[in-house]
Amino acid sequence: ATTLGASAAQTGRYFGTAISAGKLGDSAYTTIAAREFDMVTAENEMKLDATEPNQGQFNYSAGDRVANWATSNGKRLRGHTLAWHSQQPGWMQNMSGSTLRTAMLNHVTQVATHYKGKIYAWDVVNEAFADGSSGARRDSNLQRTGNDWIEAAFRAARAADPAAKLCYNDYNIDDWSHAKTQAVYSMVRDFKSRGVPIDCVGLQAHFNSGNPVPGNFTSTVSGFAALGVDVQITELDIQGSGTDQANKYRTVVNACLAVPRCTGITVWGVRDSDSWRASDTPLLFDNGGNKKAAYNATLDALNVV
Ligand code: G3I
Image (cartoon, rainbow, N blue to C red; front, side, top):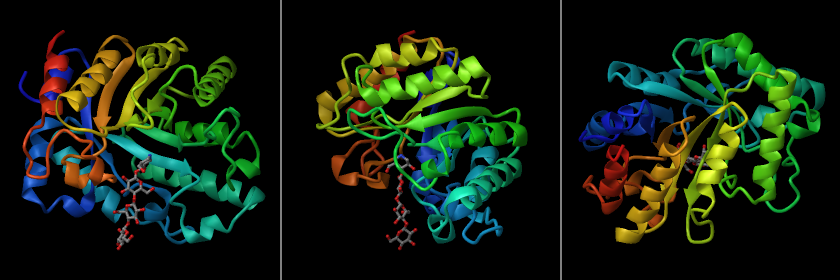
């Protein structure tokens, strides 16, 4: 097949991109996005600060623009994200304890209910584990409401939208040997054993020279999948250029293709200039919208099977 989405679909997978509502008027951007991808994640528009700027006053205007663009172009949606320590609205940043727990659960319920039936998978909780060797939870106002805040968020999301797959999403959990990876693995195993609703693990997969594609990446994908959850590569971007970058993209795609429960890949933007770290030129299209070597390698890898 000749596009990323159609090529991934040959093995029952999807190939998505992050979409920014503010760029939907850019026809160069929407032309590529409409042609190549079959899954959409709102880059910022469904986050907590965007959807509940004042407590109890929900604003879905930007999120709905992304969702409507996806639907009218025949694409599915990943929801990102219902509970996160970052990009909280000011009112939530100042909250703690049971007040915060109640507000967080209300947020999860309201936003998941608004998008009910439209979301393939929600990143219910994002980035809740600490970096480094501790394997601990990340300290945050949400974590300080009690260690069970994550499972409470998942239960609220399941109740609000039973058809959506519910994912735990994080970065730096790509190397199987890292403490953070093993800590997330233990949490997911615990959730599965106790019947806490969880369906998928999202590997953000933001790679650069300091955080390269690990040699054991396929083991990480298969390791999580062995728990009986889907694995999705949710925010892929890889610093670099030329053949070297192309080979790294090929490695990541092949890792997903090697694991039946790796259900899809999303890149975190369309053109390099759309990236949150544009100077790394980490995406599949250059600033002019031209296909890069990384694009060709990705397409070829998707078409091998
Ligand atoms: O929209 C405002 C604009 O009005 C204002 O003038 C400008 C001034 O700073 O800021 C604009 O908002 C920015 C927003 O992106 C939209 O461009 C925010 O400051 C900026 O913080 C925000 O960055 C986003 C970042 O998440 C915030 O945490 C990036 O676009 C987005 O790509 C990035 O995505 C995250 C995932 O959600 C989670 N995983 C890591 C990933 C990369 O950091």
